Amino acid sequence: MWKILTPSGWVNGVIQADENGRIAQIIKKEGAFNGYIIPGFIDLHVHGGGGKDIMQGGDAINIMSQTHARFGTTSLLATTMTSSPSSLKSALKDIDFFMKKSRYIGCSRVLGVHLEGPFVSPDKLGAQPPHARNATKKEIDQLLDLAVIKLITLAAEIENNRKLIPYLIERGVCVQQGHTAATYQQSMDAISLGATGFTHLFNAMSGLDHRYPGALTAAMAHTTYAEIIPDFEHVHPGAILAARRAIPKLYAVTDSCSAVGMPAGEYTQGGYAIYKCAGKAAARLKNGTLAASTLTMDKALLNFIELGLTLEEASLRLSTYPAEFLGIKDRGRLEINAWADYVILDESFKLQETVIEGVSVPL
Ligand SMILES: [Zn+2]
View 1 (spheres, helix red, strand yellow):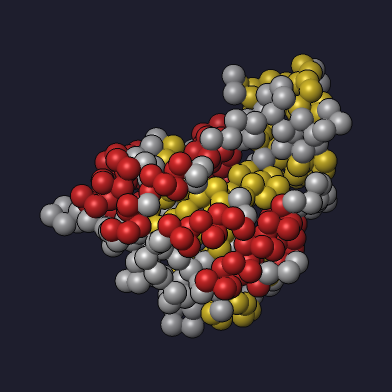
View 2: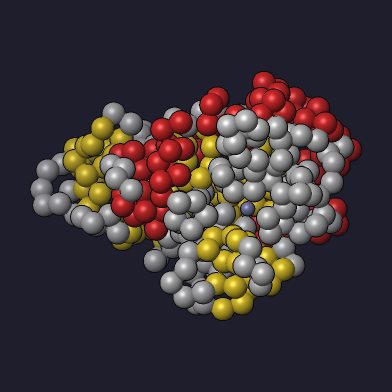
C-alpha cells in the first residue's frame, strides 16, 4: 500500500485512474509500506530545462517540460522573459502550438504562459534583458491572441501598467507584482485593483525598509499568495520562514533555466550567457548577478523539509496553493475526478516516480 495524501488527510491504499487520466477511485488497502503519494508539483515559473530556454522556440518547450517531469513537476507555466515584441510573439506561437497537441506523454502538462515582463521596471530587471516597456492595451491584446496567458508579472509603479490590471483580470489573466520598484502605496493600489500575487518574493522588488516600505512590505502585510524560490541562494532560509509566517499561501517556484537537468557549464537565457557552477543551485550572469535557478521541485520539497515543514505543509506549498492561485480545482489535490497527477516518494521523501494524467514518466 501507499500512504496517499488527500484533502481530508492520509489514506492507506492505491489510486486508480480512468482511461482519461483522472482519478476514478482511491481504494483503501493495508499492507507493507511502498511509499508516499502526494499531488504532483505545480511550478508556475519555469523558463527552461534540459539545455533549452523557451525563448529559443522550436522544440525547447517539449524538452523543457520533459525535463521537469523527471523531477516531479506534473504541470507548469511556460515563463517568457522581457524581450522584443517579435521574439516574444514567436515564443508564444511555439508554446501555443505545443499546447494544442492533444496528449504529450512524458511531459509536464503546460497549463499556459506566465508572461514575466515585458511590463516591468527598467531599474529592477535582474537578469531580464533590457526590453522593459510600458503596457498598452494594444500589445496585451496582441499577446493574448497568440497563446493562453494565465499569469503576468508587472511593475505596478508604472501608471500604464497599473491602469491595465482590471483589464487583464477581465481577460482571465492573474496579475503578480514583480521586477518592481513600487512604493508601498503603489503596490497597495495594485492589490486593490486585483494584482493578488507577487513574483519571486524578495528578489527584484522594493523592500521592507521601515520608513520607505516597498512592494515586499505590501506583500508581507496584505497578500495571501506569493511565489518564493526555495533554493537557499535566492532567499536565505530565515527569510523564507519569515515570509511563511506573513503570507499564508506562500508557494514554491523554481524560476528555473535551461541548465536544469544538465551538467555545470555555460547556458543561455533570454540571449544572455549564464553559468551553472557545480554544487550551486543558482545560475549567474558573468558579473555575478543571480540569473535564474537550477532548482527542481523535488529538491524544493527536500529544502522545505530541511526548514522544518511537515510533508503535508510542503505539499500544499508545492502543489495545492499554486493550483488554487490560478483557480484550478482539478490539480494539486488527490481526490475523485481530479487529474491523476502525483509523485511517489520513498520513506525519506526522495522522488521515486512521477505520474501525469495517469501515465508514469520514466525518471
Ligand atoms: Zn523568472
